Length: 58
Length: 213
Figure (tube, each protein chain N blue to C red):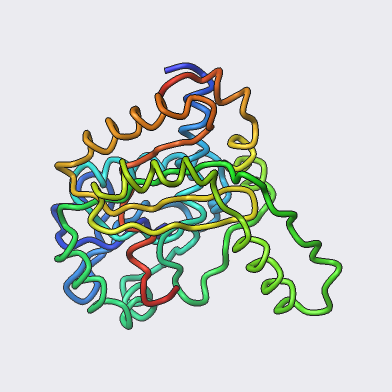
């Protein structure tokens, strides 16, 4: 697996961990600085067509 | 110690030894135990939970709980989840052999995200955000191909829109995962210029929360 593909996979995994699933009432959404640095958002990656093309087929 | 909750499962054996199991009204919550002062935003903890989440899905389908829910006692977990237990049991029994897959594609014409500071209230802002997301769509020919190649393989599917991307969430039988991946490869060969990601399997995320959407 290339480094870029691996990075996309990690981003996608974090995207699901942080932004999907059942929200338990009263629990705060994580939005602290450490997570913001990690959680770049897959849309940023998707918007970069050239980067995606370089990753090749998954 | 506190327990960072990962998901809800039908059986204890679906969880252990990959994670700790917390019994809640006949179901079990999977959890990673950490020190009380461990910040939930800690990078290593996030990656540890993500890794455990993937290993748990290898064992059995479960309902994903969004990261950030932590408890100190079994009683606290039960109190916060009690209203959902019956629904979760029903879902877990119905979809034990299914998982989610997602296809994300950049919007053909991304919408401009509204500026929060231009709105007097949070409600107005959220409505504007929803309007801008609703206007987003994928390229029509690509979307038609997805409907032809992928959607028929799913037990259920749903298109989701954000301001810059469109996503198809699919509920897929585990036995059909390779067929879905093959369909994704065919889609890639038919649309080499369209950047998209077909990813999964994931636990029950989108389809676990139908009543709350």
